[in-house]
Length: 494
Picture (cartoon, rainbow, N blue to C red):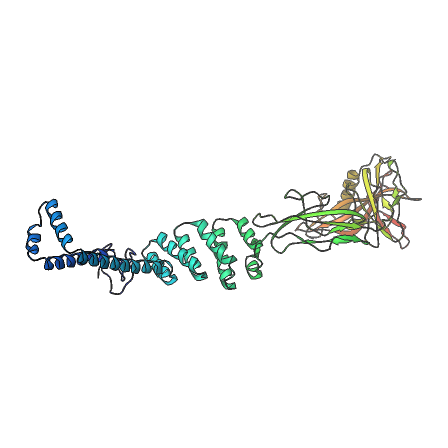
């Protein structure tokens, strides 16, 4: 058997041509048959009429090819003679034509409303490369009956033909279909994520995942999610300081504000817990994942009602000083005091105040804050000092003179600090403090620092003192009562 469309050889019993996809009408379309039946019926009528009218057959045959007018006159004579025969023949022909037309209509109706037929037709067209006709047949099949498998086939056709939006719509229909099994929904989601991955459209992946409540799917592609940060405390009023933590389930960055404004990627980056002390805080945060997708903003309000400790009292007022001075602070009861010298406000990670602090030479700024047992910070106390000592000796001069003495003693090989005795590394010397010792005088206190070959530095514990008025150098130690013991060094002025 050959295909009526392309002429290719076909196996018997095939419904469609495997080359061009043309439908093979096992049940014919009937139009040729209708024409043939009517022709045969009219020929039969003609023969019957000629038999009933002797001598007319020859005239009729002789009239073939004559002018139309002569033939018409002969037929009218025949019809006039046998009207009942003609009428019966015409009615029979009409009935037969109606029956054939009904069969044709029935076959066509069956094909248009048969899911099996539409699927078979779609498969044949798809095999022949006629994706448009195949898609139309699959669409008609879905109109007749919902079938997730057919939707996947239709999606595949759309993908092959580059109809991206129809492809995505088809997958979306599967995801939202109440007839789809869980594994079918997951498969459709995988296809959509793969499509967006290829195009680096991570925002669409995030939207897809946020619009599904299927935890398996969300877990499978969690790295693409940009969910709002989670707060470690529910909003409300607290009678204690709270260390508020912000967390996210995937890799990325959390940005936040504390004044109620909307955060963005220029806002403060969350790194460590936010300690909320007495006051009202409006914390707003967003999460930006590793693909640059931002979450929705989440905001919470906290009211912290805890009594603040008083500000530390510093006995030494700001101003200019000419003699070594110790800075003294009164620590509030039940509190710890912390301080800084770089102008920043102290936290409980700053240097703790444990006793009097030697005022450094030159200009300096000290800030002190008290923290109570609940971790609440009080107000900051600030002091600025200028210590101008009544001496011509500078700290650098004191260090240089000490190094020369240590070279002379054989502790150092040179004034660069190279250690004698083949020990690797160097010694450095720094100002420890400026101190006044009653009955002894005013001194620069210098500490010794060891630096190994890797550059790591540690204190040796050795202290040296230079009298800022006489220039004499001493080795210094402390006795058990905190009184210094000074030993004059060789080569130093007595």
